[in-house]
Image (tube, rainbow, N blue to C red):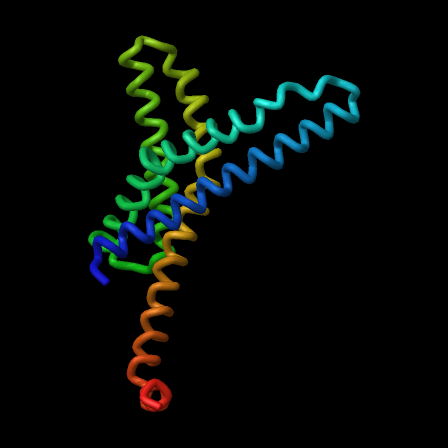
Length: 172
């Protein structure tokens, strides 16, 4: 399997996992708030809220993957392989530092360009960076689990193809 196809499949699996996790979180939060509204005797809201919230969560998670998690994970993998030449577990702190720098730096740049309060932007971006550590961890874990599963599947396939007992069963 070529490196480009492997890259696309690995990142697609990780992106799908982050998107599904965000949708599951929205569904759990919706039903928890619905139970709370019923218990508290409040209104249960519109029936359109859940589908619209799911659409918003899906769009937000896809944007988060494309514009934040994918570039951070690719950059951390490049830094690990070319600079540190170490274990894959070095990518975790590298990814965390890159994510914090990326989010805080881009928010600071936007605040300076739009002439907004930089201190308030730093507080908001710090909270956002801390909240994005969970999807980053899930993305990283799924990314490297997919790589591990590819290796496992390849080793099983090579054993299966070269096994003489399997060849006899196919022939007879």
